[in-house]
Length: 390
Image (cartoon, rainbow, N blue to C red; front, side, top):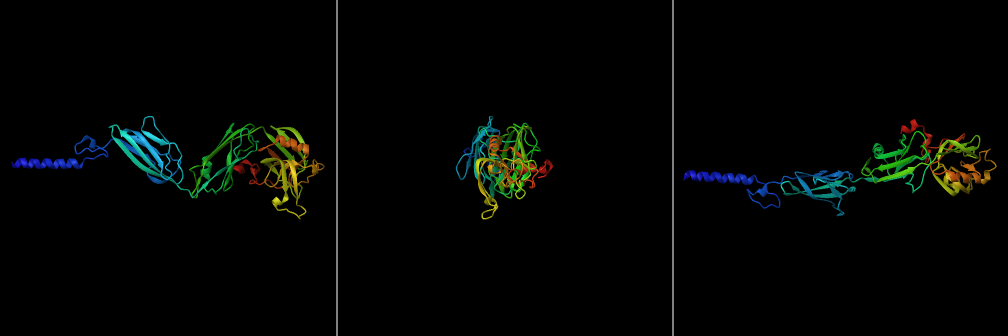
């Protein structure tokens, strides 16, 4: 009898130990010794792990080992909207396809079934970074309409509405593709603007694809890119005008061959035309030119206000190629303008009909200084080594 009592006591102790080591799976009501009480084999992981300051371009990825996913739901906590995603063909992973927003929290709920046919649920949350500011990338030139083309001197670029301190990040996030392939480099005009060009004018009939992938990019000092943008620019035949202040003649070159010459009058010594390559940035059949726009107003005897026709802008300093019937007698012999290149009505209309945005006007033999690089498209004033230095 005493032996029997001792044996019974030991057996009860073993049962207690076994019960303490058993895990009960939520949803399974099995008790000690019930096979349903064994932990499921499926292991679900969610990336990025629950944390803050996640880059919004980082996808949410859910994976399962020893099982398959059944449903994955990612919800914007504040908006209640659902993030789209795709389940892999083998059912072992799910990846979000929607780009996340800045400063947002997302709740993730993943359900799976293990190879043991037991359900598993995993939850997490992801909070994206909140920028101090978002910089919008304006494209230069603006994305063109269907059929629009540009000249061989056209500069492409990006300008921001916030100061950029992480220039390397911007350059790495922007891609320029030229067809046919040509070398090129970025140059920072100031702390908000960068332009792209090659060592020489573009080849005729080049296609330039600009891809600005700045959303989610840290631009420095808490500023992030606001959005991605892209544009395609098509370069037409080469049209270059060579305006010579010594001969007062302007040669017209089409694909490198001289096709004509026009008498001109450029800026007089008191108001000289800038020297060097200019690029046409705008054209209007009629333009009001007012000296008050640069501070020379009546009663100053040098003040003027006049309507000019067939006008193509070649700098933001008020320089145009345009018609001026009043200087026809001086065209071809004397420079009398306020900095513009004057043509006869007939020649001005012919020039206007042929030359357009991105076409080049090279000015030589003028007492004026070179066109500043920041003056719209003064980029070609720098040689290739100077350009690459920035």
